[in-house]
Length: 270
Image (cartoon, rainbow, N blue to C red; front, top):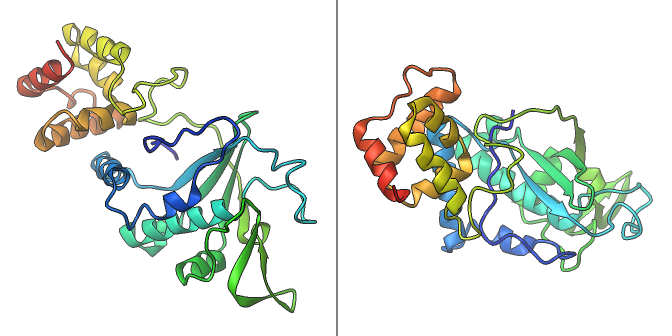
């Protein structure tokens, strides 16, 4: 089950533009703020008992229709760059939590125009080829990947690989995550990652009530990421433990200490 979705900062592009897949692929080896943000997200997820199970991207080009004429295999939302990003993210996940758990990884393609979302898993062979450097992000937006070495498809050698041959369709069921917040709310944070004024106000109003109402609002990965910037690590660990207990139904055990209550109230401006 997906309990939370985290979006790296500054990923929003102008309408009609796709994300920079090469930039994302370079994230692991960079020392950028983006990499530090990813490491923070993974650390908080670990504190909540969560593990990474996939990634999601959106597209607004007509890759399901007029823009998808490169193959006779039918329309497809996953292009070459998407496949390589998904494989590299899965490889990183396998290195972090182990091969068996890490390969249980999905790629979600969201049509930004309709909201329709499709889920896929990558074939073991395609992930291995990316790990060996035989497949890289193409220079142009295309569903066709150029392999650095000849591969055999239907008994024929070729260096061109249609991304459809690397995908396994995966079924999805509707589910509301424990740390997803109110699904009807647009955003709890600004583009900078800081809490919005409305979110701060909503949290502050709960300090006069019981802890359960406040912790319920704190069961939100986006809010926790923002608070992690503001409070000390020992207090963040204490907070994550509380919301973890709350999300698992241990409501009586999820009680704010006086010190943590004071710290949160101060950073929220109360």
